[in-house]
Image (cartoon, rainbow, N blue to C red; front, side, top):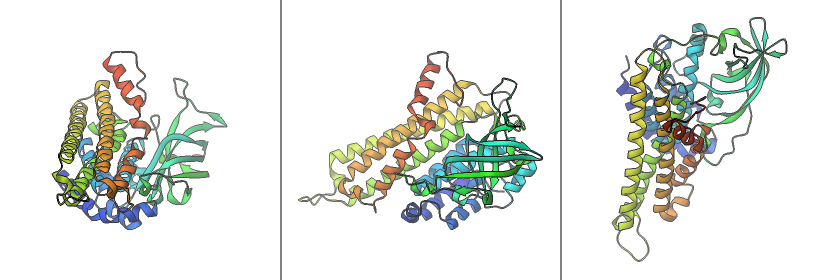
Length: 385
């Protein structure tokens, strides 16, 4: 049986192994097949999969720690890992036989986009589906790809008891999906976050996951606020990027000398101040990040829903972590001077990656506004929070 500490040790070892391939991964615009297979075999894609299906059912803290560790080596690999593990949380509302089929290989990868950009028309035994989804991170290597869909029957939208449209996440086989060459991005280039589409494909009923399909198992992993792991994945990637940026900047300033001086940049008071500030900012944000995850996980051990105050704290901590990590990377990029501008510099890549991560809607300024309203006891729409 794999112990949690072993998974984290694997992640740290993998980070060291994959770091030299970061330029290759970025140039390819996707994770190379052999790297993706190694990630699957290491168990990274199964962190939140339940034990009966070969998963580890780890805590959200350990899930975030694994993603953070991988990000110190390569941001794209970490990003795809968190997409895979959060996609697997949908398995709690999927039939057991479908989960077994999707997770039939040790290195199997399932990714997905929850946005309901597809149309699924009921058909005997399942659905006929057409749709297109952007931001399909990891999908070029995925064995199964999920897409959110609005459900229709006889041409009319199916609604729930409240009168709102019913949405399911339907899982497609790789051979049912067409990847579109859309991923020409500023950073996180290696994530393969291309758009994908399906056109009038048949999906069996058993591969539909949704609130109305099946109640998730009553275990802590599914009592934990459902949107928090997605946000925490972004925060973990950001913290890993920040850590790597500090470490690389420190290496550079210990060796680099400016013209006319025999002393390395590390001897300058300004350098010392900037490195100390970066350490304080990143480690403070990291402490808040994991403190809120631990509190939310403790609450999830008890029956019943977790209080919204935990979602509030966790989402605020994620947004803060991403903001602070961005500031740290910017500072370390600047501190290293002209060295940073070259494509060969990992600081240049880290700068681009962190700025793309900050653009995700799960860490937008609206998150802090919503948290602020909750702290002020104002009426607040917490849908998706």
